[in-house]
Amino acid sequence: MTDIPEGTRAPAFDMPADGGGRATLSGPTVVYFYPKADTPVCTNEAKDFSEHADAFAAAGVSVIGVSKDPVKKLDRFKAKYDLKVVLASDEEAGVTESWGVWVEKSMYGKTYMGIERATFLIDGAGVVRRVWRKVSVKGHAAEVLAAAQSL
Image (cartoon, rainbow, N blue to C red; front, top):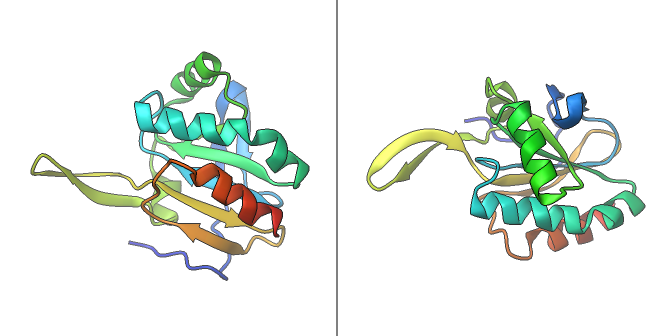
């Protein structure tokens, strides 16, 4: 597994995003990885980041959520919950692998590969300033916002 510690350069990416757009690392950015769109915990996380979207924008920080879901599913997810953040599709898992969040997981005694819920705060120079691994969603977006406002 790749580890991206604080103080190192964030891996560049260019992924398809909701609405036919592209998601790239440009300027101060929060990149959060989540396992699957339109599941309860992932929905709560996306709604929480969306609730703070104006405050992130005021701080000059963009927010990109990344999953392996296809763009069409991301479009439906975004519309269903009126989400205000960019949702990027990493169907081939190349970005999630390069960011070290494509990991072995286990549920009910079975192991499988999946996306670890993790968040990265990147400054305008492309340097990782904060890393949150194995994220607990409640209160997380507000904590990330506070860190983003201190960049």
